[in-house]
Length: 511
Image (cartoon, rainbow, N blue to C red; front, side, top):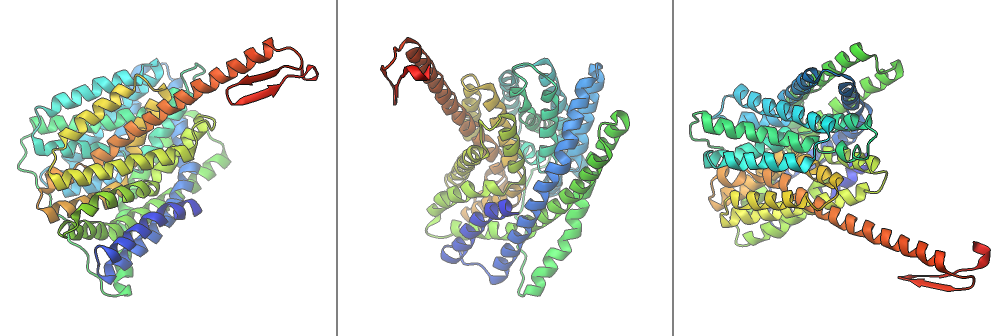
């Protein structure tokens, strides 16, 4: 709970200060925001605990069992079905599908889920057959930008948005754990690197599927209207607002977790992998995860959406709209810590790398990436820059870096893009962008939608640059070690050895 409090406090303070100094808001809206922040803290605390106790062991077990089957067709079918099941009930995706009214609800959900299932099967194949991740990424993004050439312009942001939002708080921890389980049974030197990368490929599936739908499905003109801002005038109305929405998000989250639980029960019946005390621990973790997600989603949807939109709208119509760029950068830097799946990824990275890549390093890298994403988004809306001018060079640079960074960092970077584009992006940053677009007279579909796509892109560059620095420091350390060994080997007793920043007095007694 302390970690959740420290993650949510900075973004809460920034928004509250901005609401007083830059964009005054009704007291009721501010109270909604404060109560929403409290629910987010509790939700993150329960979710993180539940993910450790239930989601990670379940996904890890499924990944291990997949490697034990010699029937490749069965492995692919199971992977596809798991991908479809967990995506169909992803709460973030349900919220997005309800907003895109021009596309039938189940057609939208089914298309995205099919894309996730297909690419999860491809990702499992990559791990089993040790295919280099960068090759698949280059091929996949070449297909994406090739399809985008033939897709209606207003549909492109939806496709990228669907990829980012489909990889939400249910899908990410589960599939990350599957990747860890798949690689844990391998003993080759690349098994550690292949622990990551499943989410990188899974993100691609919905994008390709939605672009194909945009090409072949005859769609009416797609519009998106900003949601009405809830007005409350008393503390009683604030409590009623949250209490009224809690059952809604329980109804959204429960099917998602039950679908994962069904997969786990099937695994347990077939393999008898877990003992009684492990099953009890997983059951308790399941309840923690359910509670945490319901609190979290209620907090961000009821408390954060109105503040995000009002803040963006009021600053966009003011005479100092330029402040949106530095303010967006500051919000981006701190808001990434409030994404629940970020903490799951950071812990897994630290565990798999045996502490060589610390959670603190990951947190700082993701914060820089998110800050860059918000700065780019605010600049794009204010100056009317097409999203293709950002995504194409951004992804091209990220893919070029894959040839120079350690393979583990490539997988981590592309997985990081998916965890950053979670519920906080969908329920605070998107309304913020919609408010700015509304205030500047820009089309919401063209300029507000797409923020999640940019949020998913910038960590790819930042984390890989961090990988280059890590590679450089590791090489320097290896050179220094070689010099030390060589100097000590050639020294005589009583010699003073000077190499680099280290000076040693070599004594006979120390031989």
